[in-house]
Length: 539
Image (cartoon, rainbow, N blue to C red; front, side, top):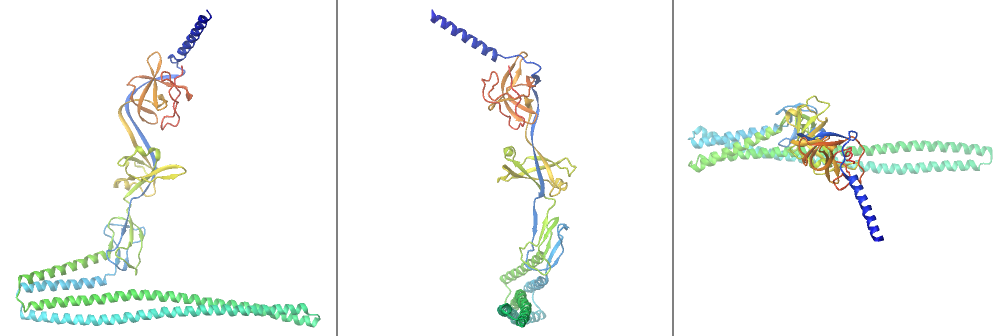
């Protein structure tokens, strides 16, 4: 009997517990104080990313002469605006002009010889050719004599410059030795004067009579005066000796500079003398070929060889003319001069950067992309550009590249992105301007949309409270794009479905699940939402 009573009591308790759970978990009707109803709509949604950036120069143009030489004129200053083809710098053209003149003569001579091969020569022409041969030989002899004279002069001048360096070095050594001797002598003299003062002071201290004290005081004063005089003399001697050393050092620097200048001048002179000999030898060979043709039968091979000579002479002339053109440095495009690296008298190399131009029409925008937004962008995306410094509202920049190396500032990781601008947009901006960029990182058309505040999150899942006319029922949904105000519902809702928005802003506690969702997970913040999710359904 007791056993059946116990069973009955257990059944009653379980029934009461089950009824209480049903009552607690059953769907409840809404109240106006906690919820408001909205309908799911169909429309377009987009998500934008806002960035701050700065305008910078995309490129600078370094301009170099095509040949080495001495600068004769500089026609550009920093800050100048230049046009394409404008002369910026000119090298000394005297040597090139001489070589071009020689090459033109050589070409005319080769062309004349070709013409003579093609046509019979008169006696006057033959005599002229012999005279040209003799003159070419005389030019070689004269050029060789000149080379010998230039070599001797250069050797002598360089030797004199080297002797001057050696003399200056010897003077420096003498001055340094003199300084050391003066330092030693003055030190000894100063020590002797100090010793005299000490002895006089000792005599004064040991004096017993008035006469002896007066004599000792006089000796002490004389010794101190001599010590001060010796100090002044020492200082003057040391200063003089030091000045001699510094003067000798400057003389060495001046002599070494003169030696370098003389070596450069000698090198140029020797190259000119060598070039004169080569030109004369070339003219002699040309004259010899022309003279040989007078005694030989003209053959097709001879004509072809002469044609080749004409072509070679033409090619050499064109090369020299190209070098002369390269010696006049011009602006390859429009721009602003940002640096001038040479001045009149400087010797520059063929690849030396003498002028740098800033292309103010080729601008770019650099902006920092936060790490969390990196997967939302890709090259080719366009961005709307705005700035307080401009009034234009239609400037568009294109994302060109994102630096793969990150930067970190106070623990925040970001990546530098570069945006390109077309010519029209670049005209409205200036380097250094601060700008704002707006990129559309996601968009969808004809999507089912609900207010973002309608979303409830449980773990990694989302749900909304659907109103069927009587009760709210939590319904799982798949979301797409989220922006600041709206959310795209990819599945789980259709247009005109009524959903509840909570008017109670108190967040649901982390251990509370939505009814019908099995209490799954905690309420977590929706990605990108600063305020966190709205309150959940409460029966």
